[in-house]
Amino acid sequence: MKSIFNLKYQHNDLDAKLVLALERISHVFRILLWEQTKQYNLSPIQTQILIYIYHQPEDERNISTLAHRLNVTKATISDAVKSLVQKKLVRKQTDNEDARYFYLVLTNKGLELVKKIENWGEKFKANFKNIPTENKTILFETLLRVLISFEEEGVINRNRICFTCKHFRHQKQGRKGLYFCELLNLPLKTNELRVDCPEHELAAV
Image (tube, rainbow, N blue to C red):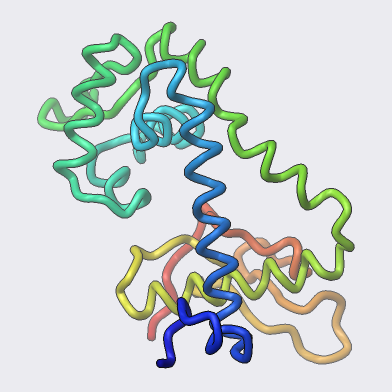
């Protein structure tokens, strides 16, 4: 049977092995996230929300944007935010220009906590230390293209990746760098591509 979980089949199929490797890595992410946050009585989604609020601009700290970025429903985000408000880690700030809308703000208690939990990915990052830069660059570009494939299939929401931006261009031969950003008017090497660019504008299909 041709299944990635069939041991005999997967040994002879590189694509199946890649899927399995990434599946194992997803387990690592969940373990690291749980280990970092369970001591503070937080769920993974609550942890992600706190970190997001801390790092994103004010106009993006709302229920709709959070749901889009974290690929979950608005109801899920609303429930998680309600719990964070009850824990006095987050508060709702009414928009000055339109009282019908609000954005999320960390309380002092939330700010202190997020500084303790936001480094949960550092342990994973440390594993890249001894991998050659060339290998990491190839892996990075490959993963970006895999993400875009899932976006196009509708499996995940759109990220703000350079490859899908209207300002992104492939470089002509002989020019420095592989790619070019017309907004910044700068050539880009592969390791300078962004996974989440705030200036991203989706290119027309």
